[in-house]
Amino acid sequence: MRFGIAVCAVVAAGALGATGIATGCGGQTASGPGPGDSAALQLVTSGLSSPDFVTTPAGDTTRLFVVEQTGAIRVVRHDSLLPTPFLDLTGHIGFGGERGLLSMAFHPSYASNGRFYVYYTNPAGDIRIVRYTVSANPNVADSTTGDTILSAFHETYDNHNGGLVLFGPDGKLYIGMGDGGSGGDPQNRAQNRDSLLGKLLRIDVDAGDPYAIPPDNPYAGGGGRGEIWAIGLRNPWRYAFDPTSGLLYIADVGQDTQEEVDVAPAAQPGVNYGWRIMEGTSCYNPNPCDQTGLTLPVVAYTHADGCAVIGGFVYRGALSPALAGQYFYADLCNAWVRSFGYANGKVTGVTNWNLTTSLGSVLSFGQDASGEQYVLTGGGSVYRLATP
Image 1 (cartoon, helix red, strand yellow):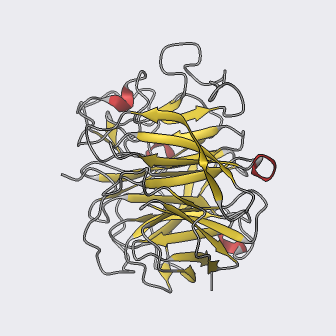
Image 2 (cartoon, rainbow, N blue to C red):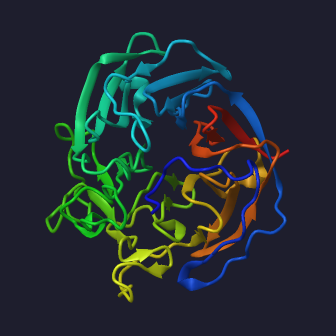
């Protein structure tokens, strides 16, 4: 039984899969992938150890910060990898399978306060969100400043750790939590409002100690954990905000049959994305099920077409204007990259990109301060996405 983001056999590196399922809001069918357009992948750096995220501080156009799942954060300056890690957490994390150092986020005011946040699993398997501060050397963090601001018990199973910490356009810190692992969410945590697991969390790190609950969170006044922003997620490995459209995109890993991408207004609290009631567009537990109040995916594909969805970002860069507004995503096993547009509640089309480089397994995407997008591979490489 397939649980979530995990190592699997890679199928014909660079090959494009079958169409699968593509659905628009309200069950409308979107145009499926055609022959595909070409996308260039410019090699930025290689030789990394399981790179799983790329980000930069706001306004920093000279550096990339690459997170390695094995425990280090590396700095790439002007496309050259610096020899000294920005931060090395190998002694603090538990690495293996879906565990490890999973992402980082720079505070919107990083230029003045030097604060950033990391998401990792500790040696016991528990999830930790830890705040650090940069040192006097802008390319090296102060490793003594680590302060755990949020933790979640996750020792029972080693999969479905979620993995992304990200500041939203509202300045709040969002945290994507997996459902706790195993298959089928046996404790039904994703629908349990008293559990942090299987949720998208939203906290205010600029108020309270170590954070405050934003008063407009759906359960800030009771009925569930105040940190919760959305429920019903299985393993939201990667999600993205698009400030231009005001939308939140979540790529949620499926169970046995379907992978999905969800889209909802970023400012809408209390969205229920359906898991474990639904898997993709189908009832899961119970079956048949009541879909009232659930937000269904706008795009889904079957496991004839891959094994685990890897979410990217909506392209807002300047290098490839033709890509503007396209949300990119990939699959861990089948090594394809796709994108779609979304407007007026409908998917405007799915493009299956013909890549100029064979990727092998795609582990993650990243985005820099200029809105350019990056693809990270299991072979240890970081590529910049562009059109020829």
